[in-house]
Image (tube, rainbow, N blue to C red; front, side, top):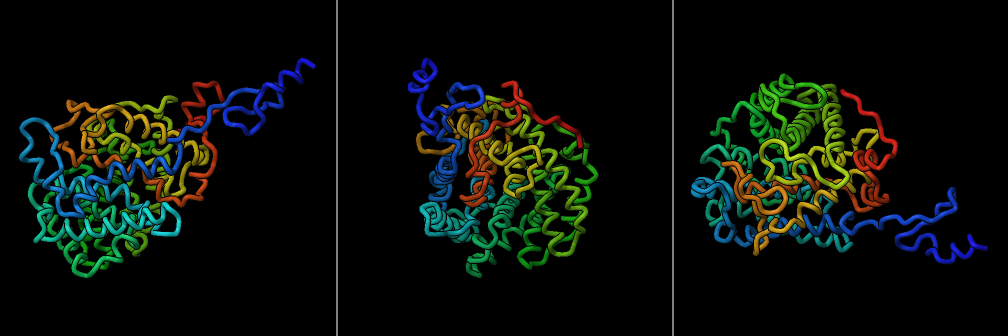
Length: 414
């Protein structure tokens, strides 16, 4: 009788917040799935971040209204490059979502809106007559962001590149080819040259095989073990394996394989290393949704998890990492960073910081445009709405399991 009366006080199974644990004959509260652990939230954040860049560029007023926050004394230098940074990096992160194309759903109609805006942005950015014509040649930085632009075009090739008019395509090709004037630094920068040339190959244009071959061979040479490459000959304990190296390396070599310029074994080797690094990245996420502020360029915020996001997008997660645990972990990181006070200025532009506004962490090469690399942490939006990544219930990631006393997979070096 006592037990029966007690159960009457418990919400029925399926009522938000509670479930009945039959094996112990007791009920225990479970945390409801947070609203931010959802596709709708991710879409809302991606568009919130991207709107100031894309809307203003499409209206040819990006240079007129975009702020240029940077180290004191660097304003003149950064003002010449920050706009291509903002656009190229935004496109690199948003393009997998746009690649899904338009459909009859509300999200599909939203994608149609952003596809239209982005096509206009592409036309403006490479139009020499536009006030927002971008710098592809002056200084070294344009090589970096032309590569992010090319990466975005590759990720959304059918929806972003193929529908463009011939004049805009010709302007983009010309702009990308002009970056050959820039000598890449002997580091991850080799991949920027390689990415641009890989896009030209994909687009059926003349491409420089030596720039691609040199980047590939050097990065194979710079492999340090256990899924990580050096940034040049030296190993740096930072997030550049995710910001640049492994995502670009995977996609460059995939294009070479697709065009019969590289063997599949090389691609599988690079992919196996990337999967190992994705496993390491997943284990870096604390139960609270934080991660170590190690190395440079921390103002890229959750862009630090581009590689994990890309491996999820590719459906190549290691067997012991489920898609929903990656979604839940990344959702919490994105939520904590986006909701930190001061992340956006009064007009909706990102500010320099890791958690909120922390201008002191911006290196001399960081400016407002640089910050939009955070969007590459949201690549799984390129998975359809009905993909298990989005539909399966929330799941604990490795550290959350570990510190809760649950069983978790033993880690193994590659």
